[in-house]
View 1 (cartoon, rainbow, N blue to C red):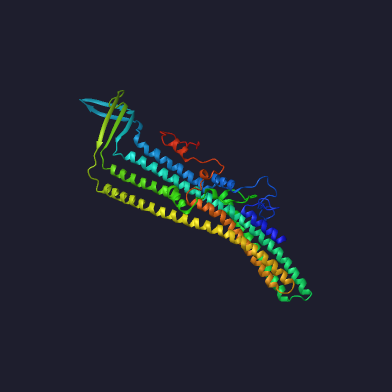
View 2: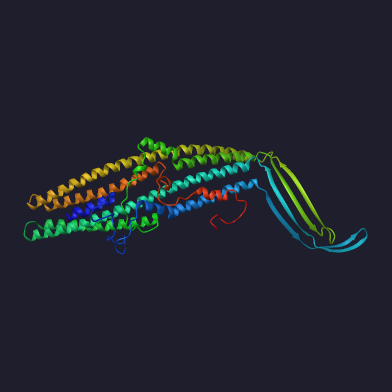
Length: 477
């Protein structure tokens, strides 16, 4: 009975049900060789949603993606600089010595020529290159935003996997330890029966071998749990403490496979990013074509000069000059660049179709895994119940001599295996529901309403896109 209660609590905890005496899968008591998995009685358990919120805020991969997007935002401001004037202030000073004759007079003059000037250049027409460079930069920003959304989904899915892996390995460790206790008792009983002549030395050896194997399985389970805890720390940013049961994300799973594929083809960030990449490539064609157009500019200059010819003289000059430059032939380089850019547009469009196929395939795979995990949970539950009945029957038959010790050990192993399989199936049931939501492109904090502040990429973009000057970032760096 002790064996059944302990194993049942582990299975129900992973599935998300409350089991008597277990609460929400308290990890207390599962300390491993210097590794404290949980506190004894924390005030509140860590839920899967709160763990995902932690990962959303602190995951370094996601934060690096956000920093990369902020850097990409600056490309728009750099492109728009082509619309604005450039202003230069220059100054110079020197010394000049003149000795000679002018109009029959001997001269020996020392002057200090110098001055300052202000020059303003304004682009009036550049073949629409600035306009297309701005379009390219904006499309690149939109593509990077979608890539960031894909990174967000991958981060949340990896965090959900890490969370459920800790629960799975904790429950498995509890089962393996319980199995050691059961086999120790089985070995004690077998030795007692051997001492009174009911069984042979072979039966004792079989029980000892199974106990040694069970202890090895405990060591393996401890190692797996350590590994899962390390991955949890990497994905979520903290050590796992008092984890609550994970629950499937079924409320966000589409009603059918066709609906899931339709949603994914419309909303998946990888598809949207590849479509924006097509816009980037098309804008690049226009930029190269603009190099064949005339360029029109305007320059204004004002200068104050001193000692230009004689000591003490000075003067101010001002000018406004318009210029036009018409390219006639540049060796064929621009034409080649235009042809090359057009081929890159075709490549980008083909890539869109490939990404669509990848997304469709991922959705079908994720959907199949979810359906399989649902069936596996039901089958594993039936298998556990059947093996419990079988083990009880084999034990009773062994007491009257109709079964051997090996039969009992085999039945015990079958029950253990089925319970482990149930734990794995319950973990897969939760993870695969998140996998479907990720595959359709909706595993985001905004869509799933995870309780945390949402990062807005548009906020930084609006802050920098029209800045004319300033070296500080919007956050003060």
